Length: 83
Length: 495
Image (tube, rainbow over all chains, first blue to last red; front, side):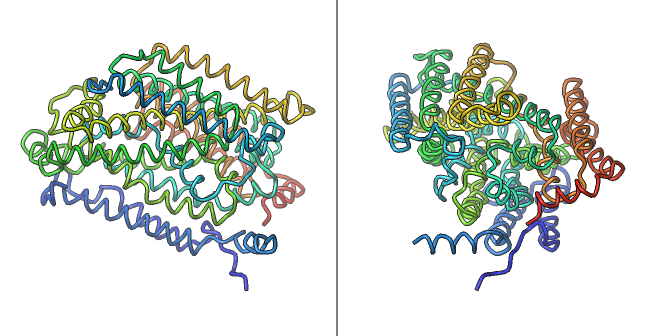
């Protein structure tokens, strides 16, 4: 059975999450000039930005895998038939 | 980029890289002799690129040698504020999600070859297509110029001046033209793979060497705490705005790179495209992140460099690391060979797309639609060579710093984004509104760039894009398209 067709742009909920992650990868929410505590020489705020960036990559991976399906089923079917 | 250490070993590595690239070109040509008979074969590799090759060709398109040589000096000068270079590469993938799924489908359905092809299919408007084609050609030309300057500097730096700047430029461009000429997209994508691997290997060796010999991030932090705490601290107001602007400008700009869009059309299947994007979503940590750390380590390793001196940072660090032992010596020679190879790989992608726009969108569509595919390809190649010669003449006397050239090309390129992306979803988008928006946005962004006006610290290209978007949307609402046109647009987009 083929999976339902999905296009990320049509799913508003995804973009709310993307919006939140976008807000988090901008350093507006830290006090200007602050850098303590340092972890292995990295300022705390940079670690938080890196963390948010990792979350963004992880979420992108999820969306790419599960929320985008327009052609794949047909293409896979064609491939099988060709074999 | 000065490298005291390499000299003749650098020459050796460069000749080796050159020979491999030529070998790939000749092999691809032998395997696909019919490549010059079809635009699809020549410019898109027959729409059959698999996951690994597609990934590396995306990688080479987005990360050039400039990422390795240009980003650490910026991190050196700006400190942690330049950490923005990591998320902005991730954002590119997020922006792709807004249009790549549908554009891939359109590409397959209508056999699209270039981004302008799509714009023409969607709007059927000569002014819109031609303006978009020229904006893209300008940006691509600008991009090529940047790569050529970087090749020259890289080669003369790596060989300690044994090969002069100009000879380096001419040597590598000739090789690039030959393998591009022979195998088209396939040659470009296969060489991208080799170049990408060399670059990744070298960058990691530089990081390891820097950590061993310069003490890594804690040492850098101690130095900054004592002498430059602003490089450690959270960016101030203007710094935060600059951060935001870079995220948006690069996120959108790099996603609509015409040569990147063309790679969406080259994918073998949706699955392949999705997998390549997934890998790309994680690459910023391994590339931009690594070179950022190298720049930060440089702050303590080579303190007190002025702007011009700091541009040589990677060369200085590599020289110091290479002097430690034979392993690092050869790793650093490979790194710089890899950097030059990566620059060539970005340049070849750009040149191929440049030629395809000339072949298909200007010559093939408006000048001589009756021409055979073979002739269209030939015209694209010849104009490509002419453009290269012109750019080499400019590169002979390199202008400004690389970073300034980098920002300028985005300002104009992103003006194409509304037509490219909005057109995919909104059937009422009016061609006249799109044209006016693109033109006004371009004029506005250029004027602001040259007059150096950046209200609120936001880049002029983004202001141009905002005006462009407003004109597109409001114009389309006022100039309603006829029911027939709306239906036609529906049929084009209709899925």
